[in-house]
Image (cartoon, rainbow, N blue to C red; front, top):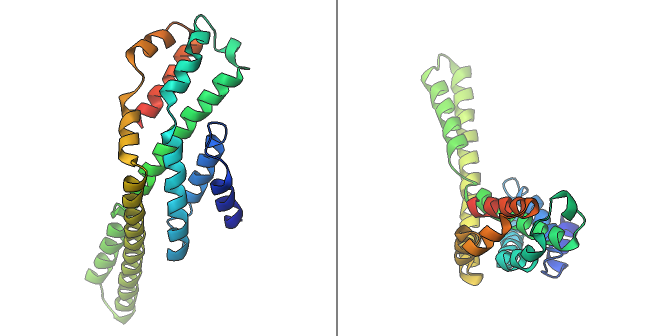
Length: 209
């Protein structure tokens, strides 16, 4: 199953028509990273970062501009069947998901859960009354140490591949472009119709991610 997902994510051409499917596959793969073995993480992370970078590479503003004139005076219901509008919506949705995937990977290890486990282990150690409690406290400390080491290893691998993506795909520049949002003239044009306002709301969701 994993092999099929990775093959599908990497074999599809990186086009506007495929980007939504590709990023959904990358999102599914990213959910496997925390619990995966080191070798699997090493295989998954380049795919996830590459697919995310490809999604962010698409010039969404240009795609929106290409259909904006056709949205003037149009209602959202009247544009539901528009293949061009669906394609642009898919691109924006994919870019939003790509930014969310990157955010989740970058925050995969915040230390909170491991800190709680250490605190529980230490509390148990402080309340020891007999040999049984001492043994239980020792086991808790071991479990907490294992969890912390595992999470730390995951974070280290993520940082390694994130650094490569930042260098190879100019990922930071692409993210900065998304933060700039829609140009003023395009914003004004989209605001003139219900369908345009709906599309503008999608653009703003990408911007704030």
